[in-house]
Amino acid sequence: IEDLVEVLAGIGSDAAGVTFDYGHANTFCGEEPEYIDRFLDVLGPTIEYVHLHYNGAHRAGFAETVDPRRFEYFDQHLALTRVPDDERKRFADHLASIVRRTPVGRSRLVGLELPQRRVFNVKTILPQGATPEEQVDSVHILRSMLAEIDGEAGSTTG
Image (cartoon, rainbow, N blue to C red; front, side):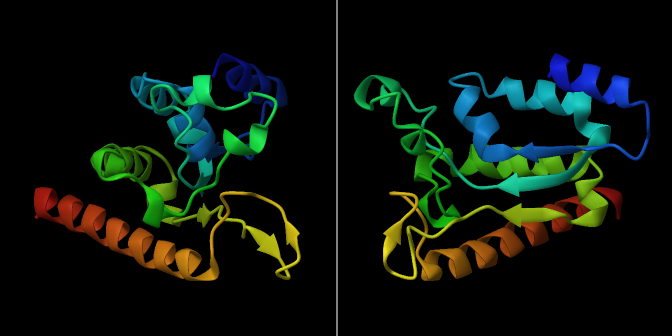
């Protein structure tokens, strides 16, 4: 967080912004979900774009069971269909915070970062990659979540 603040200050232009990668933040915040809130507190006004995917590497015990040299297992880029039931509320709450506390709330510049498992059904890129069906289902889930966030905002102001 502090490094990004320093970089933005060094650039010295309001035209420079931040891409917030939720999956990466979720992976590296470990069992400290307040890290994402701190990121939004400090850099929220500069966040212009969001890469959205789910990584489960922050879950307890994961790091002990996976070879850390296999980064693709930590940066999983899982489809929204694979957010575990016990993580859905946390995921939805974080998305709501991003929408409410950053310019993304107006621009809706949210990219689902869901690479396919295999390219041309030949080369494996990401072992946990999304199927085309999961990609489409993730779009529907994201639209539904954004509509719910918008509905909540409308009910508090109206």
